[in-house]
Length: 150
Image 1 (tube, rainbow, N blue to C red):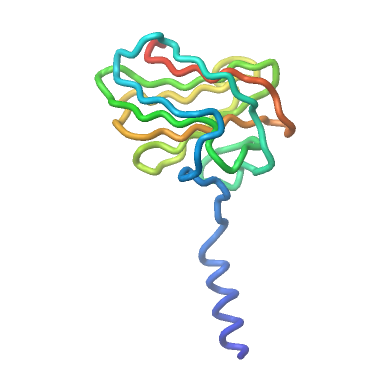
Image 2 (image 1 turned 120 degrees about the vertical axis):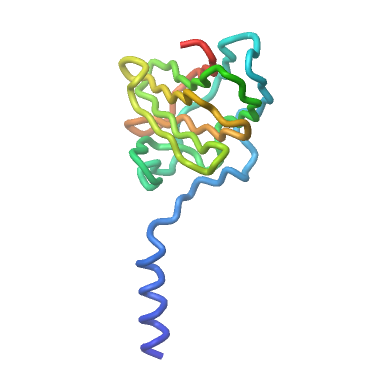
C-alpha cells in the first residue's frame, strides 16, 4: 500500500502543474476565419478581460488572470505578412496565445502602458486561441486588435 501511495506522489511531482486553460472549449467572444490580406485591418473584438485562472501556471513568461476558455479563436491562413494581436484597455491587460503548433506566447505591456502585444513575424496557418487577462485581477472592458500591419 505504501508503494502505491509513493508511486502516485512521484507521478504528481513529475507531471508538474496542469494548465486549466482548455483550447477545446468554445471561445467566450466567438471566432473568425481570416486569410492573409484580410480587411478590415485591424479586426476588432470587444471582450471582458480577466477571469479566475492564474495564467502564470502556463509555460513561459505568462501572467494575468484569465478565463478557462479562450476569449477568442482565430483560424488563420498565412501569407507573407506578420500576424499581430494587441489589447487596448483602460486597465493593465495581458495576452496569452496558444498557437497552431501548440506553443504558448505571452505578453504584458509591450504595446504601451498597460496594453499587450504578441507578434508572429512568420505566422503559421491554423488556429490561434487567445486569452485576454488582467494583471491585477478582476475584470475589465478591453478591445482585441488583430492586424497584419505594424
